[in-house]
Length: 255
Picture 1: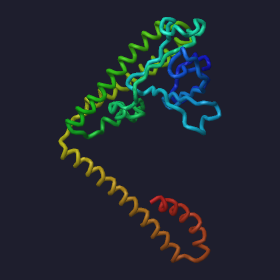
Picture 2 (picture 1 turned 120 degrees about the vertical axis):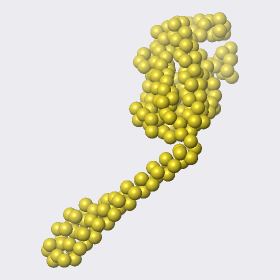
Picture 3 (picture 1 turned 90 degrees about the vertical axis):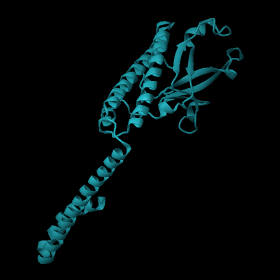
Picture 4 (picture 1 turned 180 degrees about the vertical axis):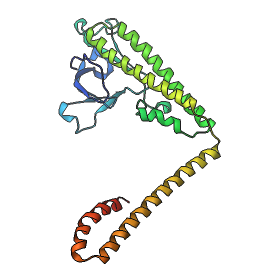
């Protein structure tokens, strides 16, 4: 992989060649693969030209409850060349099948996503469930942050430290977002199931009324234009046809 010295951004893919142990064991040698870190997933390809053409093998997901990248020591890899130790890193990742993590919105850090919780109508059971899921996610992120900070302190090279620093900063930001979301969920006053359904019905009814009013206004404008065209002469209506109708018809098509 190319030397990484900046802060990692999940929106900007990182690509490069890496060597992975054959059969998962260093003593069997190394296999060269082209790696792509994109959309929070680390994928391996046989060749660089396969990217975008073939599906890569997903070997790790940064969104899993456990994702740690750390440096290794010579004692851990007795079959590795001592000169290569500083260039070797180990990834520990759990499977991305935790329902708690899947239930969290992908844009949790956005202003609109966090503030939208203020307008939520949820029952006591729904509130408790969401709070429990968020608290579990917070606990997991805190554990990952502690592990990443320890790994960064023990990094044997500047490259390894820079890679770990990006993960530490990302975890800290995610913790802030999760805690903010948890606080806003806590501020929501729970309602009964019937009240929640009634609020949804009122919301739908309000939107129907708004759309009906807009449609009525458009119909009135259309009828008024037709009436003016009917009482005017050919010369008077020609400009009306090309201006007023051109302004009204696109709106009607949206309906």
